[in-house]
Image (tube, rainbow, N blue to C red; front, top):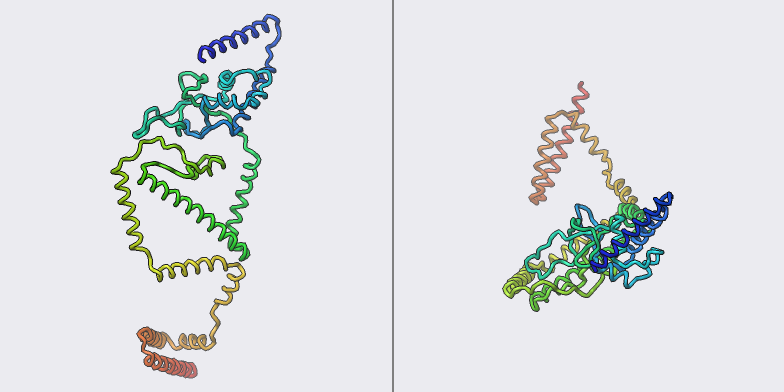
Length: 380
C-alpha cells in the first residue's frame, strides 16, 4: 500500500509539473479557476462525509481544543460501503480512499493526529481504541490505516434544529422563572412531569449500579447496562444503547471482591438500623407536602390579598392609652412596663389566677395614672 501511494504521489507530481510547464510554454495562465472549483468540491465532500453517521467518530482534546476525529481504517471502510459519497468529486470520483485523504490533508481540511499516552496503563491489555487526548503527528502528514487518527479542521455546519434550539433556550429560561404565576393545573402538570422524569433517571442509575455491583462481586465481570447513558458526546441511538461493551480489563482479584462484599453488607445493615420510623417518615412527608402546597398555591393575587389582610387593625383604646402614658411622664410609663413584663413572665409559667389579678391591677393603675395626668393638665 505504501509503495502504491508513493508511486501515485510521484505520478500526481509529474502530471502537475507537466501541466505547469505546458502552461508556461503556451504563454497562457494556469487554470486557477478549475483548481478553485476542485477545492470547493473537496470542501463539499468533506462536509458531506462529516455529516454522515456512517463514519464513526469521537471527540477529543488536542492542544486545549476539542476536535472531532476518526480512524484511518474506518475512513477506508466507509468509502467502500458508501461509494455514492464520491459522486460529488466529479472527475476525481475514481480516486481511492488513500488519495482522497491525502488531498484533504493537503488542503488542510484534515490533520493527522497521534495519541498522547502511548504506554499501557496498569491493568490494561492494550491501548485505548478512542483516546481522549491527542496531539499533532509531527513525522509525516500522510494517510495511514494502521493506528492513525485524523481530525477535522473546519467548523461543522449547524443543522436547523440546533439553530432553533438556540432561540428556544431563552424562552425556556423565562418560562422557568415565571413558574410561580402559572395556573394551578399547569403547575401540577409541570411538577409531576419533572418528578416522574427525575424518578425514572434515578431509578435507572440505581438499578444499573446494583447490576454492575452484583455481577462484579459474584462473577468478576464489569457489565454496565446502558453504557453511554452518562456520556458527554453521544448520538440519541448511542445514548440508549442497552447492551454493554466487551470487558477488556483484567478480572478483579478475589480479595477485592470479598472486601467490597463486606462493605456492601455493612452499609445495608447500617441503613436498616438507622432507618427512620413511621412517625418520622410521616412527619417528613407532611413537611414536604406543606412546602409543595405553598409553592403550588402561591399566586400574586393571594400575595397581595394576604398583605392587606395581615395588616393589624388600629385599636382606638390602645392609641388613647399610649398617648396618656406619654403625657403622664416617664416614671409612670416605666412602672407600667415593668408590671406588664412581670405579668407576661407569670403567664408563661401557667399561673392563670395570678395573670388575671395582675391584669386587673395594671388596668387600675393605668386608669389612675390617666386621671392624675388629666388633673395635672387642668391645674396647668
